[in-house]
Image (cartoon, rainbow, N blue to C red; front, side):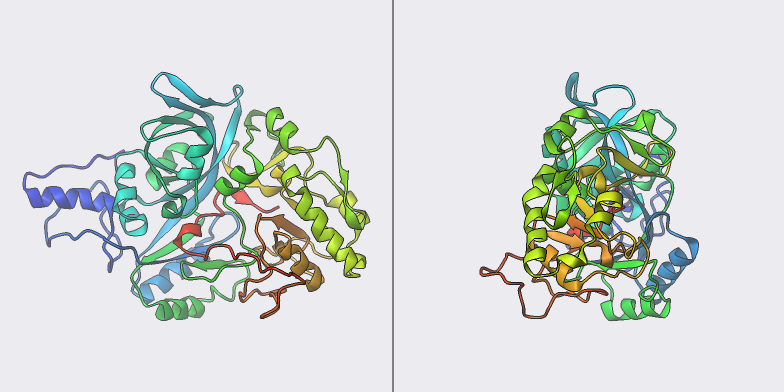
Length: 449
């Protein structure tokens, strides 16, 4: 890792620190971390962050989409960088000689959502205080994630690298989840290289720019019209079909470890017995509408209520129970990793028994969804998001999110909520917090399928 070279003049010292901890508000970052500091004009600290726009795809970011997003940003005069999102297995947390958390054995690890951004741009994206420890080759961990394992700043963590080795990092800061975009661990792309996580997954446009001009440029470049691309902005309204971050998922549905050493060719593997026994039933259980499924125990009451309301509303015929019981359901009792390498990739949400798939034939993944929108809205009322509006449409998929979504008004492509109408509810549900910079990286390390 290149280290900062200190100048002999005080102003040069300030600038040397600044190129690692922040980007300017108006210009795209152009200084490499190995360059010498040059005092041309006095640097100014970023006191408030601007907007952010994430342009991403399912899996690896393709070159045409990358180039279109970077060109659109340049046309709008906005800085842009290429970032990476993935999960990596955590094997240990240490505080000096004391073990705070350790996986159960060799080859086992806790999947962690990782977001990597270029070091020279981090200050302008997440702020100087968050960027500073990363410039010192440390990592920043989200507060929820730190709380789950009792971790604190100064602890060290062991992560599985793509080549099977163990890489140790020091936690430089525990930050509020929203300050690091909803991910679990924020690192630099240089640190991601050490882990072997080299695939780009997003273009992140950030800073102070004209929103209208940027969106017009994104439209001109075909990014809003491309069904294989998702554009998320820090000013988006709350999305009824937005999903939970990995940290939030773990806090609600439990954290498990994976047997990375014995991943199948398709990415299937065992989860830790302690979590499985606590959160999954021993076999499929009966639900209304004739459904039998192995679902996380936390979601059982909401799933039962949703299916019962579907039946009571006379919509039970819209659910093919036989198909769901044969090809759908919540969980198989195993986890699945959509792999980048043997140990890096994205964990399926079905690993938690969090979503249920129904009507799989008529709603194949990637196809135009064919689901009764009345059923969709009932499920949203009972704390589920619907996969029909995912980046890759997944109309069979209803994913538990722990909060009602039927009252949110959002320009959903399929099955938007009814304006001004809540579905047969006597007391209005509290809406989830608005979308913001705090959710831009919430999907990193996860996949719906």
